[in-house]
Amino acid sequence: MTTAARLGTGGGRWGMRTDVLRHGDDHDGSRVGYIELFFDLVFVFAVTQLSHSLIEHPDLTTLLHTLILGWAVWWLWIDTTWVTNWLDPNTLPVRTMLVVLMLLGLLMSSAIPEAFEGKALLFAVPYVLIQVGRTLFTVWAMGRHWPENAENFVRITVWLSVSGAFWIAGALADEQVRLVLWVAAALIDVVGPRALFWVPGMGPTDPHTWSVRGSHMAERVALFLIITLGESIIVTGGAFAELELDATTLLAFLAAFASTVLMWLLFFDRSEQSATEYFSSRSEPGMVAQTAYTYVPFLLVVGIMLTAVADELVLLHPLGHTDPWTAGLVCGAAAVYLLGNAFFRRATGGRWSAPHLAGVVVVLAVFLMRDSLTPLALNWVSNSVLLAVIVGDVVLARRGRVQQQPEP
Image 1: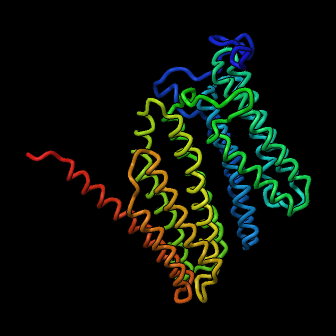
Image 2: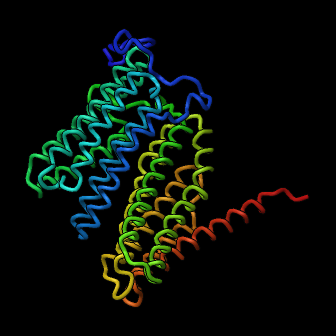
Image 3: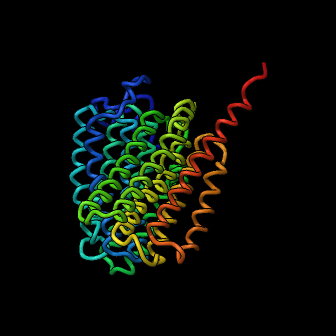
């Protein structure tokens, strides 16, 4: 007997009696609820913790740790977004679930700076409880009312339980083994959706069941990027407030502000609207959601977060020799963000963007010029590359529209 049959196909006999699914295809049925925005406040703290850990410990090991922990934070958030894409956060059971996740997420986020030291369990245990607990709740919530997708979440529970075992085992191991086990856990989380959550005896998920609400998911991901950009402003403003005001400091502050504005323009002005329209118009948007709104945005988040760290370093030491670490953060952050935008554009129905890809090459070449530039000059050169990408993208878009216009 299949899991769907046990749950009760066509109106299950097992599960929550109250129907907590989202209903309706209009704006009200897809709008982001206030409780979802309230839930996001935990991730403002989480992103700040990740940035400050890298600022306080500027080395490659901490960078690797930050990327692993950042992936866990992102994966937790985006998995919750998938759930609230289907469950109505304005119903009491779902709202209660989100508040419980907030508490666990706050505990998890508090441990981020020492997750690879003495607070590994404080990070891993809440993380696993959130991932597995939320998924079991979704199985229960969908059992009677959407048994096909409840079966999908049974598979997801199996995958998250396996990766959760690696997270917990890593927390109990010493630091070197912990790194290996947590990388394995992160890879399991990465592979799961691409493997369609295949489970022995159950097979893979049918992607046709992933009938997501495109406008809701697009808005949620955009809001997370706004959170990350906001954290960048907090880092810049906090560093600037503690410095004595002079012309050099002011120029460094303006460079940091310009980088934030340019990153906003690259995504929200040049890509977000057309991507949302494409996503919302798809008859089967599940795989688009998996690529463009699950995997790719992590590159954008990393680019913004690394830019915030780089901006603070430039604010603190704007003149003199540019060390490889600072140059790598300035140029690497811009390259990752441009590459993320290029992937996002491609995954949402667009072509490969020549300006974005050329910008990646140019900004990496700028890294090789670091010995002839001060950190402040390097930051302005990187910003100039981002601006050139925007201008190039606008020119190509206008040229394309002119060519598509019918002749009189």
